[in-house]
Image (tube, rainbow, N blue to C red; front, side, top):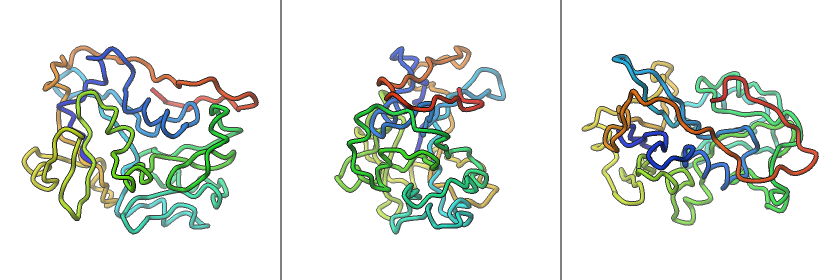
Length: 243
């Protein structure tokens, strides 16, 4: 995945909460308050802020898979890191090992809509969620198998998120197709916490939304909303530090 921060304005231009986050929530019935792709607002060195959409980094050397005592989190042959909730024992060691804080735990009966219970569970599409298990962004492999882009890529109004294949060296945001290696090289792309050796598969192109007219001094964004009525009996909780 490539996230072009020059194109990301936190959806301020459309006057909505981050649409990548809300599309992910809607597509996966992600339990409230989980934001599998969370849009952080970070300070810029020269003043002002930038928005940074942050999904699971889908590391090539993922510490989470090395730590899980039951093999519930694993890498697929395509390189995507998944979690099998039917195997997860809720020890949360993988959460402790993730340096990106991109894993979430169901402390009680997951706050989901009632219709989530009708979904046929598969590790490639984590719905319905189970009490006492860990969840996270999965890069939507069930969509990729059908030739579609992840929910977040489809929903971004500015085309800031590209999804592709490292072996094919191609990525697309739905409107444009780019040569992956050339695109990240020519635009000085970086990865989060590269010094840790996790080899993330999410690349960022530096920026603050300038290509879509954002003024970095205009701070704040609309809060994420969950688009459904939570099913009765769900456990309500709040994630510390959630924006």
